[in-house]
Length: 190
Image (cartoon, rainbow, N blue to C red):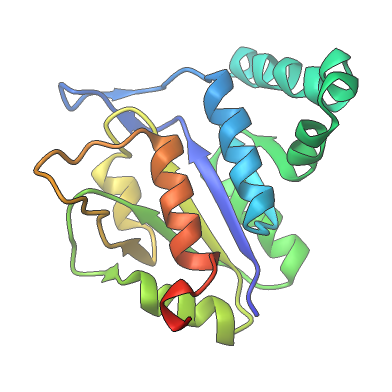
């Protein structure tokens, strides 16, 4: 079985005007995605931010749950942060995985649109279950990663479609849905 890694990308991100920006760290994203990551056996969850002060903020939030008052108040949440790592770029996340695994990971991302290199969840799940090359799935914040950044990845996972017309999930919701599709119980086989 291949190891699964995820990353929450804060730069380079697009805003609603198609300008390149850096998005801010949010407590909910760090915390909720960490909990989903440990639930679905993610090897490491990278919080990727290029601004040192924002990484320091994230580290402070994480320390509250790892060794501060939060670690004794709610020990389950302490466990959720064991696999979270703060890095300053996508490249550092990829290098970290390569050092841990001895091979470069397959890098995939998500988008609400399809592309020539779009891959289905079934195919990516099959790779994770039957191959050994690790996979890094990156999630953009704001209005998504820049086109140039996305073009550098191996795959783009197919969009998540709900029953209605609206299609703009929070990143926390998208991560949970995608982790369940890639690593969740195969309920359809029951």
